[in-house]
Length: 94
Image (cartoon, rainbow, N blue to C red; front, side, top):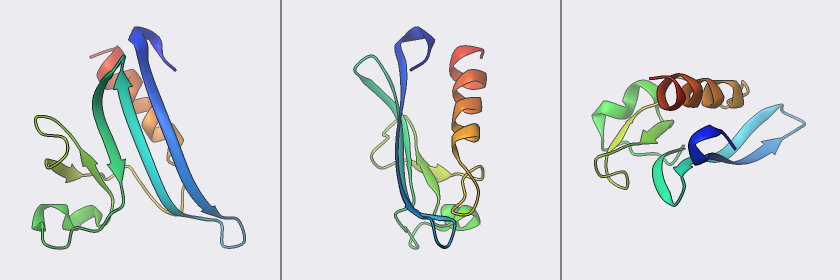
């Protein structure tokens, strides 16, 4: 939980033997308003996402259908520092 009623929800599926993230969902809300979320669901039919396939961000204006690349996410490195930095820099201190 952050200032301004912002909450980051984190779900990760981890393989401790391989030391990788095998799945995730990261969501950010302000109060009851869903601001954006990240997921690794493949969308090979969207060429704009190829640079970070399968990582992408669902962002406004139509967060269910508007997807953008997510260069800060990985299956092999922790994602939490990136997610916290993004909230601090973009939402709390624009």
